[in-house]
Amino acid sequence: MNIGKTPKVVVVVVVVVVVVVVVVAVVVVVVIVEVVVIVVVIVIVVVEVELVVMVVVKVVAVVVVVVVVVVVVVVVVVVVVVVIVVLVIVFVVVDVVVFTRSNIINPLLC
View 1 (cartoon, rainbow, N blue to C red):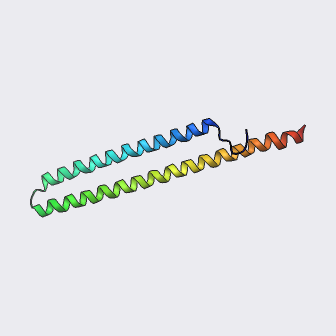
View 2: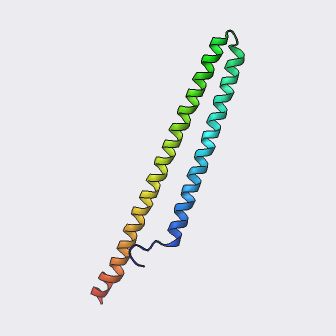
View 3: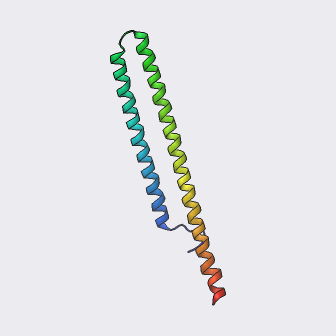
C-alpha cells in the first residue's frame, strides 16, 4: 500500500455514505414541507375570516418553509463535509501507519 493511494473500498464507503445522507435529507425536507403545507391548509380553512388574515398566513407559511429548507440543506452539507473529512483523515492516518510499519519498522526488526 503506497501513501496517497486510496483503496477502492474507501471510495465505495464514502460514496455510499454521501448518497445515504443526501437521500435522508431529501426525505426529511419533503416530509417537513408536506406537514407545513397541511398545517397551512388547515389554518386557511379554519381562519377564513378575512382576506388579510389568509394572505398573512400564506406569507408566514412560505417564509417558514423557505427557512426550514435552507436550514436542513445547510445542516446536510455540513454533515456530509464533516463525514468526508473524517473519513479522509482516518484513511490517511491508516495509510501512513501501514506504510511506516511495512517499509520502516519491519526492515529494522529483521
